[in-house]
Amino acid sequence: MESDFQNNQIVRHIYIHIPFCKKKCGYCSFYSENYSLAKVRAFWENLQKEIELFSQKFQIIPKTIYFGGGTPSLLSAKQIQAIISKFDLTEIEEITLECNPATLDESYIAALAETAVNRISLGVQSFLNAELENLGRLHNTQKVSNSFQLLRKHQFHNISLDLIYGLPNQTKGDVAFSLGKIINLQPEHISIYCLSLEEDVPLFPQKQFIPTDEKVAEFYHFIREKLMKNNFQQYEISNFSKKGFASKHNLAYWSDKSYLGFGPAAAGYFGKNKKKYRYQNLTNLQNWQTNDFAETNHEIDFILTGLRKTEGISLTEFKQKFKITFLDKYANILKKHRNYFTIENGYIKFQPSAYFISNEILMEFV
Ligand code: SF4
Image (cartoon, rainbow, N blue to C red; front, side):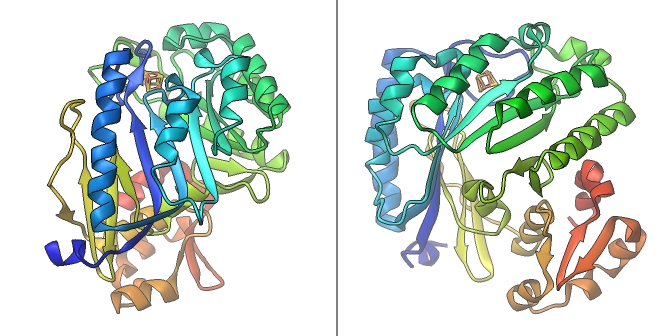
């Protein structure tokens, strides 16, 4: 293991977890703490140490940096730029900041436009105020529209909007309404999420009101078709973009690229050739660094992430990497689900009819 660390591998993708929120949303299981200046200070100190430590072990020359959370837009533009400037930016292509509309106003957006951030992911979730309130979001739909217009005004030309579907008591009409509003804003990218409620979240008692699996699957296919009719290309099971605006960072996750995660709860994946390692930082603001770098099953990781892409996985690349033929090794699974797979131009991929149930099929490879 240590020898892999010493090989000074080049890493081109960075995730930074900003673990603060103003208030916890009712459905959220992500790690975050109540925002305070003292906590941000402690976080900044530890983050710098973590970046320095990893910089001694890897050559970090990022093409993409992704600020996720939590609520990254709780940090000031100055703080965000200070983090960005810790890295060698000679090859940088994409820097994404997840923003909660509740935290945005014009002076913040104007300051953000002066940083190196060039992609915004805006947590819209719904265009129905009753749904937003039930989810415990701190913004209403008016705030979303205003934030979006201000981002445009300040020259952000690569904006992604999030939509959650499968909400308690939601109808197809509700989904169509929010989706229509989101499309009308004309973002470059849209990510869709199916609501799932863990037992420890406040909204869990409403699980009984979530529409049936059949209904939620119908919502998924409705959203997908509507987006494609509106010139969005689907490049991953839950991600759609206008031509040329697929997220380079997220594509790295699904394309077997190494990445480092900084901050509490952040995850990393790295290694060369056949040996790949994963780590997941601890959810502790004082001391989140872990030394638990576990070797992964590279072949399974390659399949589970690669098949999420609509282009699928290259049979040639699989053979080169693992010295076996995918179609032979997994013949049983492919035979069982033959209606859900297709092979095209040397790639094996899911049929769209399999997208919504892809997780269940993927588990059979494990
Ligand atoms: S703002 Fe995001 S990370 Fe924070 S509680 Fe809400 S959903 Fe979770």
